[in-house]
Amino acid sequence: MLSRSSFTSLVVGVFAVYVAHTCWVMYGIVYTRPCPAAGGGGGAAAGCVWPYLARRPKLQLSVYTTTRSNIGAESNIDLVLNVEDFDIESKFERTVNVSVPKKTRNNGTLYAYIFLHHAGILPWHDGKQVHIVSPLTTYMVPKPEEVNLLTGESATQQIEAEKQTNALDEPVSHWRSRLTLNVMVEDFVFDGSSLPADVHRYMKMVQLGKTVHYLPILFIDQLSNRVKDLMVINRSTTELPLTVSYDKISLGKLRFWIHMQDAVYSLQQFGFSEKDADEVKGIFVDTNLYFLALTFFVAAFHLLFDFLAFKNDISFWKKKRSMIGMSTKAVLWRCFSTVVIFLFLLDEQTSLLVLIPAGIGAVIELWKVKKALKMTIKWQGLRPRIQFGTYNDSERKTEEYDTQAMKYLSYLLYPLCIGGAGYSLLNVKYKSWYSWLINSFVNGVYAFGFLFMLPQLFVNYKMKSVAHLPWKAFTYKAFNTFIDDIFAFIITMPTSHRLACFRDDVVFLVYLYQRWLYPVDKSRVNEYGESYEEKPKKKAHRE
Image 1 (cartoon, rainbow, N blue to C red):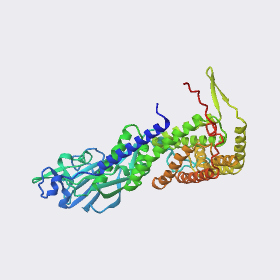
Image 2 (tube, rainbow, N blue to C red; image 1 turned 180 degrees about the horizontal axis):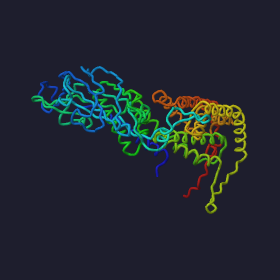
Image 3 (cartoon, helix red, strand yellow; image 1 turned 90 degrees about the vertical axis):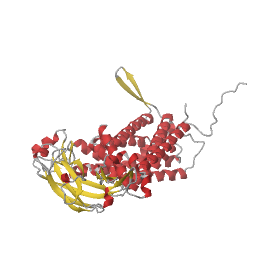
Image 4 (cartoon, rainbow, N blue to C red; image 1 turned 30 degrees about the horizontal axis):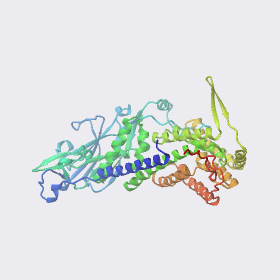
């Protein structure tokens, strides 16, 4: 059986192999081997696929809308944007009003057809045109309406019939208000025998003389379609705004973006909702490519430290036989705050990527409370009976310090939490009373949660020792705290959560100061109920 140290080494080794493999895969995505024969010059290099854009043709961009997923001619389509003398090097953003057909208003779908073709020629008369199709609508369950719980005033002025319709947990058609287009502008010469599969499906080939050319690669950035930009399509809506933006894209970024879009699509195929997939999109859209690479590495180390912190924390509490020097109130508070945050994330319909780890953490904290209170559950038939263990004199002394600290803390904490809950009830709109209750609790956790770490600091001060704390788990959690500080600048998150990241830094620095202030006394009982100066009993050795 593997020892704890060898198991940790195995995990770290697997992590290093995973990071190295990820780097290799990423390199294979962003780097594409050019055609070897192209270096010798000559337009007729065998096996090479040349860029049509190298001829510098005059192009035109046209965007049409239709309710049909396939069109054969110009019938039943509407032209919403026409960019003559389209310059592939110049970015732009334009907002147009799109007519919403009756079929779309009745929970139907509307498609956008984007054509890139020669200037002055209609797309269906141009043999060298390229086009791509994208739905401008998607289906989602409407977000429940928020109201003032005291006055009943709604956040939006809607007709009562529409409220009843939206109250049904049925998906309705939503409008995608953004359409982001890209064209690959590099004059890259592909090797025809080893075309990248990701780019190949976006390529259209034409034979010009003795050489094969690929037409401009037109791409729609689906990652920029965020849930926050969606608009519910009502039956009375006749026009909706559509923001069309364009920017050039390099081959490496194009390949990377294609892979990311495929990954998000796979998540949705495995049952992830549009909101869950949107959380993943936000990682890619809200940061540039360099920050994105940093985010990948930071997230990987965060995952490693999370695992090691959980492992050492569970190991510490599994072996713990005494609560000497440990604040029971702090353990109870951590359990309460973790469960509240989990319920808050559940109420906000947060992504499963965040919800599942929060749920696991809540279960572990509940188990730690059972250990701290020395609870045992005995079954009498189908009825459980809970028994609590007894504390020795040293543990009772620790409990006195703990109770004293909580007494002083309650004078400050309770008025702040009650005042904050009352203020939010008067001024903020919520979906229900349960939503207000959970939000009030979680705001208290985020705003004043670090105060509940003070009882442990007070116990350390009274006992003049920190030897009873799980320092291995603390160390890994500290690394994650500093990583969270980086994420606070990179990733979009609520302000309260961002401030919570920095408040944990302050608490951990105080713990470090106490560790320096109170050096380890080897005669003191450690967290496992053992003393370093006690000589272990040895079995008699038989000759």
